[in-house]
Length: 101
Picture 1 (cartoon, rainbow, N blue to C red):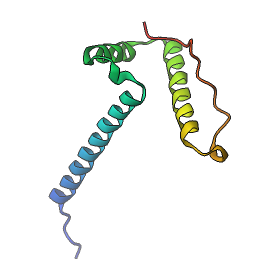
Picture 2 (picture 1 turned 90 degrees about the horizontal axis):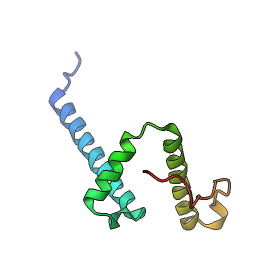
Picture 3 (picture 1 turned 30 degrees about the vertical axis):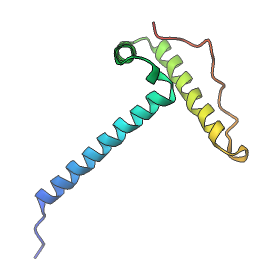
Picture 4 (picture 1 turned 45 degrees about the horizontal axis):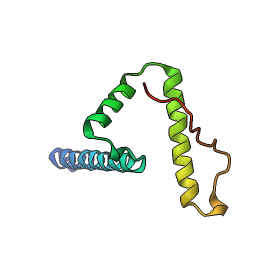
């Protein structure tokens, strides 16, 4: 005969996992804010900028922002990785890139 499943135990484990993932996401977002220098902004400025980004439907602007973000992460990886492990195929950051309006 099969052992009955402990649905309460499984549900608790899933809730714990979801809570852990949410905590990790919040921590990573905070680290991203600090790494980009956005922690110098007030909470109102940061929230306003994020709202504009989230509401933007222009695919061209979103693509430009995505490229700039990718370049940011690639440049950080190059600074922290040893020379032998660097990926030199990435595009350099464009200082005059598209800015949110």
